[in-house]
Image (cartoon, rainbow, N blue to C red; front, side):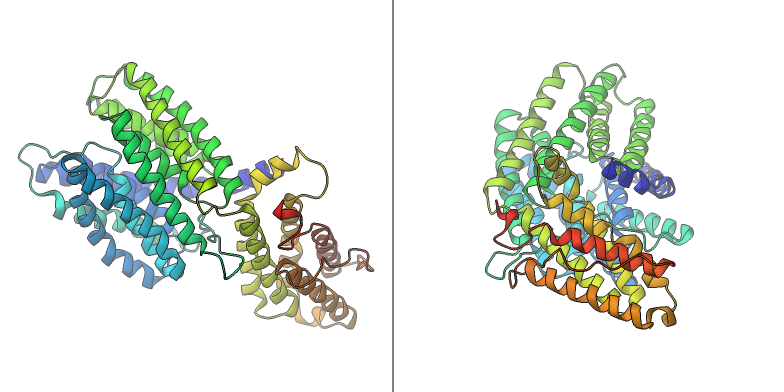
Length: 491
């Protein structure tokens, strides 16, 4: 129930509406461009794919990143437009370049947040290649220039909507990327890049061998399942959600598309209705997003003439094959361990909590702490599911303990300075600081778990006293869950 209520709180109808306005605006602009230049409908699909992702990634972007996006995205779109025909006419070269581009976009995350954002930009136009047939309309010009124009159109609509609605600074779902827990290990970004490259390479081979006319079904599913790897438990959990959603969306949309003639405008309306619902429900469960996206792809294929219930079995099998490839790679090849991701994110949360307790840039530290709680919630669902199946201390208890600190941290961040300088308050803050330090050293493998039987901070008669007591109780709970490198989490 805790994770469900958390997801419900994250549903943001306003953000979903902004996304769909930007998507419809970019689609309409690309449609007008395609009619004027006699280009294929792939330009509209590219506009929709870019806008959907840009709307999310640009919310937290600063001015420098927006400038980089405006410069780089058209260039990347041009590069992707050159790879597209190779996927059809020279598959070996096209497949190799596609794999290198996607895996490289993940590998560069090791160089910081700016590189990670640039890597996201690289992936967008290439993934768009998998959503429509790569052909040109009769009499059309070279699509290279128009791909760049569509990229600018998508960026313009997203930026204009963000400026008009004041959407800058919203939470970014991507969250912190998992980092290694020890210097001797490969960076998580490198592991994820290897996993993605291997998944896509095998998916291309399997897709072209098993489904020559629809190989993209396998490749796209492998990409979706392998992306956003936050540990093996997260990959397995998300793969289940994605497969369930994809199967449901594919069945419904394929049956619907088979009863609508190709090229009917009603199909376009249905696509945008499904996109809107998927965007709105995505925070509740990723299964809704997976169902929506695969339904859109099935409707899109039906619009271009690929229809008939006989394709349903092939599509479902392609989804299962692609998901199995990605899960196997995530679990067997340089796996990103859930333990490492959890310990790293708890360490980040405790670092921000230390700054709040010490009074160092309290407002900024409290904001960072809220972000770390968000990052922990992103990996919480599979761990909470595991907790239901086994007794005793569990990793999910640590996440709940950190989350319990959110409200008292917000209270301390807004408390008057004179209240925090009282003798009893400073004494209690010092006790909390020592406890946080002990837990951080334990997570780093430098000390045993701190004792949980020391004298508790008593509740008081005002909000600050209550916040101190709540923090003390949460840290006591956190101290009961072994977090060290060779502790319970390594089993």
